[in-house]
Image (cartoon, rainbow, N blue to C red; front, side, top):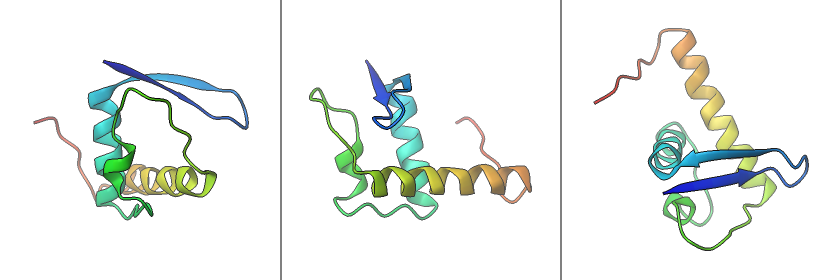
Amino acid sequence: MAQELEALETGRRLGMHDSDWESLVGLAHRYGWRPSEGSEHYLPRQERRVVCISEARALAGALEEVARLCREGAVEIRPI
């Protein structure tokens, strides 16, 4: 199954498979993202959800940190 993510401020959209989204949520949680409702709240579901801007920015910040660590060679992400 796939999800569509939309930035309400800009209208930009991104389609993503559920497994890819679950991986990003897991990485963000591992590297410091601590959403108020728990990361499980952000796993794929059938109904539409709106994520508050502070949670979305925190998620993006954690993923940016993962990307920075990868560039510096401090973290290596390998397929399993």
